[in-house]
Image (cartoon, rainbow, N blue to C red; front, side, top):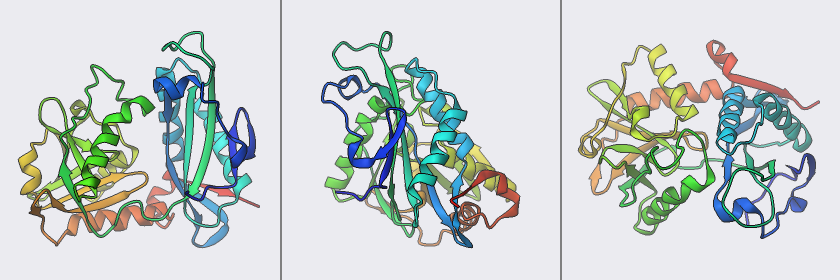
Length: 304
């Protein structure tokens, strides 16, 4: 069982993590009517009495927007206030991950979003490297990324992740670290829970928002950083075959940050990854609050 932070936020109050429990009749467990966020935090390397949170405002905005799909009005300012107090209550001493969750909390049956109660909960756990920062292997999944025509992909809705779960398990059980999912048009969409970038002829290329991707916060950060480094950034449809001949490929997300891809199916990619390494180093410096130009991306939470 994973180790969790000792305090959770549940039913509008802070409580010991072990007491934050749900009934088996909880509506969201049956119908996937929840939405979640995720963000990393770490003790300030230069001051252990401070916690650094990367792009807190943007994470709170996205969760608030996701809650709207569930007909739940949860202001970003309220989410932010709870998350700051959550950190102050737990006083983490190592890098960690926060999982805020909104869900339909009624007990009973019938899939619906009207005439049903909602709740907002938060828990966390220590988290080191989610995927190897040195290189991972991927397979092209037989499971498609859903279309925005049939699922609200602009939100992190719990029920939308069944395809991601199927793809991830298929990849792991066939000897790969991660899955790359195509959309209904056969174009590259994203990994099971991360966005994807490739490098060809000096350009940083990523599937656009019209390719049924999640509008990732780390994805947005990487593109802004690249443009500020005068690296050409192109958002467009990507063919599967492009991945196999790319100069570099990497995945990115809140948990993984930037994870280089060393192999796709039976194609081994170049070992030299200069652009990926440049972006990795830059993002790490920003997350650790060592880059003055991006201080507005980092919230400093004081524990004392």
